[in-house]
Length: 176
Image 1 (cartoon, rainbow, N blue to C red):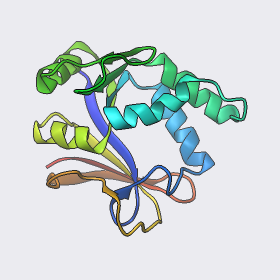
Image 2 (cartoon, helix red, strand yellow):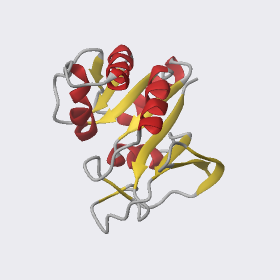
Image 3 (cartoon, rainbow, N blue to C red):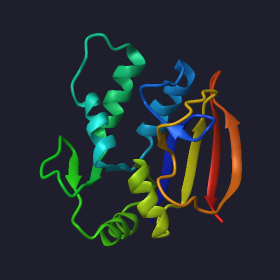
Image 4 (cartoon, one colour):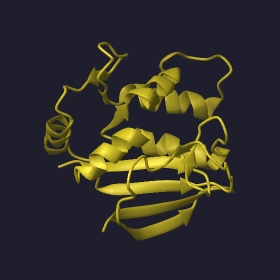
């Protein structure tokens, strides 16, 4: 059975904004290795559309960015959306019964499936389907924006923490 892992970069005050801060080179290489080891990724519509950036080669990319794109393109992607009818390569739009679809993914696969998107993570967390949270905390204060937890904060228990690169602490938590 696959493990669902919600991972996201966040500010010290609990907000996410991919334009406000970015991973340093060490953290980015960590993400390359992490994505290469995934069984697949489960996306909400908005974050999937942002991640489609990696579908097309960019001549300005460095070696790490090219490696991330290769790893991202190779893995299966499942998209939870009520509005998308088509998606890019190696991606599938899930049906309207999100709970049933995600349970099917979990039982039909081994390894780790990444969950991306705060609204999707909130829905899956309320259904008790997220097995682990990996929060990458950066020393940035945004003062507002999109909160990491879209709804009520789930009760969590810290199981590990580690520094990755110069500016991020990864907190690994499980539902309490």
